[in-house]
Image (cartoon, rainbow, N blue to C red; front, side):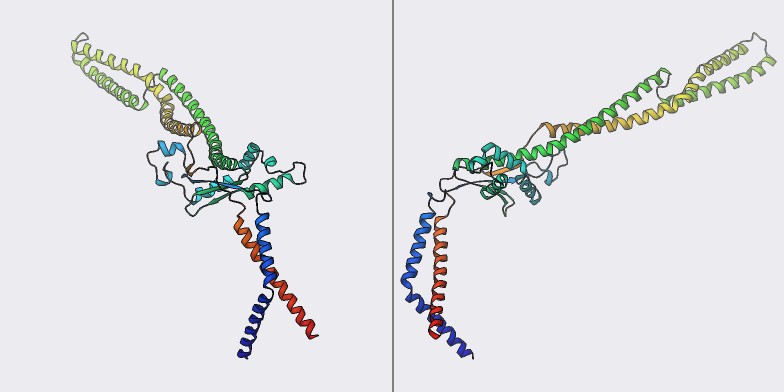
Length: 371
């Protein structure tokens, strides 16, 4: 059985070879005709040649300018000179494929007219997008760089479009980040002004309390209470001593006079300290609370000021978001169409089609002969 199958396969291959030899002249003519026709019709008269320009760049690591420059604790991922990773490359590709970049390029170079699209046709914008995507492509290389390829019939325009897209991706990312930074700056500025108003109000309140004699609640309460206690103790002690002295001495005795003087002095000090202690008891708690809150709020204000300064740097300053490896230049040779490839494919396809047609003809003859 296997022997018979081998014999059948051999006979078939021999039959095909014989058929090729038999039809060699028509096959050669068909192949030559296909080669000549494909060579002619792939010429610039029928297919307008296109030139390719390429921009290659690496995205930078995503970080804010203030964090990269002003912060002392900067990790490798925040390094201003670090190359971006896959995440940054994907972000760049997303920006490159945005409608904004496409619309700016279309408008600047009037691609609707350049591509010969009739604005009054049924789907002009769809045709424009199709032409744009056919001629302009973006991809990520195996080295995590971004490649921009632009095909155009005008080599100078191809180079200009590629370079402009490379510049636009930078400005687009800056615009996106700046919009967010401006919003954050507005929020921080509002919080800063609110906190500053609170601090000014508390400082006015403390100023009013100082007018009441409350300078430093902690120290004043210690000192005044201690002084009052000393005066009170002296008043009591001297009063008790005076009663004893009056029993044994005359009214005009110097010891009695001196004791009365000390009693009067202690009493005067108590009368002087009492209003202060009353004011301290009335306003001391408010003074201490305001002082503590003011210390906290001043710390918060300093943090907000630091954050405000950083955000202001991010809003006002600008740094490139890419490291350009290759800028686009005018191509000297066309990249499309690839003439030898068109000729090779045409010759191969015409040979296969002709061979199939010949085999069909031969098979039809065999069937007709048997019938």
